Length: 166
Length: 417
Image 1 (cartoon, chains in turn orange, blue):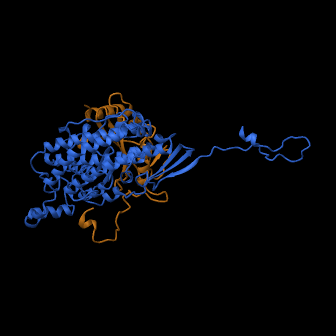
Image 2 (cartoon, rainbow over the protein chains, first blue to last red; image 1 turned 90 degrees about the vertical axis):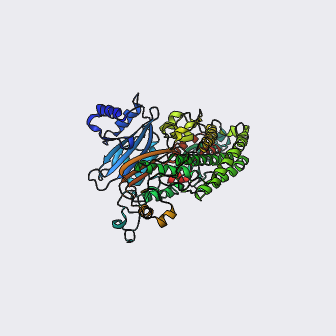
Image 3 (cartoon, chains in turn orange, green; image 1 turned 180 degrees about the vertical axis):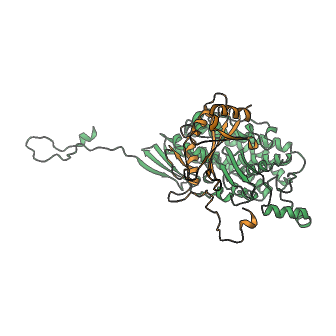
């Protein structure tokens, strides 16, 4: 049974400064890396002889408009089926520079997950062979999951956030 | 060459002044591909999604998928809804097994809030989730038969699906979009009628399933249609992110119920059926095997159903009974706070996965302490494995492509969310 501590130590030894912010919310090892190292880190975890984190569970993104310099966060969930060990990797991106390398060469299934992330958040994946919208129509000119697009009519006064919370 | 033989224009005949009839040489027969639209509203797609097939005669050369026809922006809507109102959104993802989605969502929120659900509620949830798995697999396998031209089996088992829906109705009042359970437990206990109906199902259903298997499992015509059709290797399946019966058909015994047991699945004894080649026949057989295992689990859960409360002692999160609200001050306060979404959700991020009808159904929830999720992402198994479809049907015929799609169990609601 792998422990979060053990994997975190190995990653720090291997990658040093480029991996950071280790945490384990609800027992799921979470850490951040940079855009330049994400492919390297994912490949290392996938090909590690012991960890064998060989299953890409999910790719998605989160928008934090208020955190300057870290407006977008791309989140990868990976799973080692042999060790039953899950891991979450985050990459923070700046609002004026939202692109990240694709991991399709490592996991074929990343294709649509990255397309969905592009569609909903406008994060472009460098090297993606077919980066088109997938859920929304091609003609759409914005990325709807960004926080600046409100779901409801902002002129409504019966559901204002001041009274009811967000 | 036929074209040369047909080219009867006189050529280079001395004394003939006429030019050759065809100056460009013999007629060229270009190898043209036919474009065929499979969908969006094709009877065999069982949902609204499109495949543009390039056909060379009977063979599929390539296929391009278009999805998103029923995209309803659930992830965006969820950012404006209190936690308990999101349950209704999860119903509409895999609508063939909505209780699994509901329970998965409740468990995600319970994990975030740190609620321990009593054993009785966990067992009731297991019973309902396994019933949902049976109805999901019944539809998939029944319709696979229909798409291969065998309508009879479908009719035999559809009655049982109706009976499962009757049980849902008894438990929660709805049949398809169930909105079953609450954060913190169940909304009501299993009624004696519901228990009687489940027991009746446990007696009746094995006979129906046996009959269904007798019709299909060794049926020569059916096997000719599905054996070695649309196979995928375990490596490719893992690379594509397959989960659930489709991955197990390829020979990987990954099941969330066993690997990360939730809702007391560790208390029950059951097997994981696996296939070998990952072809359509294996997917069919794995689903059949899983229905038998689900029956085993339901039987164990019903026989060992613990006594005790069916909801957690967490009044700030679990809606109080309505009659209490009318006469009890605390209940009224909690009712008001919960309905208005004024619960104190902790700041944090949770990933919780359940074994849905199609595979690992994951909920990635980020809470910033507000009344709604800051971000909610659904890991929808269909969406992830459907992208392997062009690879699986390449070089096969259109009729093969239809049964492959059926056996993958692509549910449009889950595909598009």
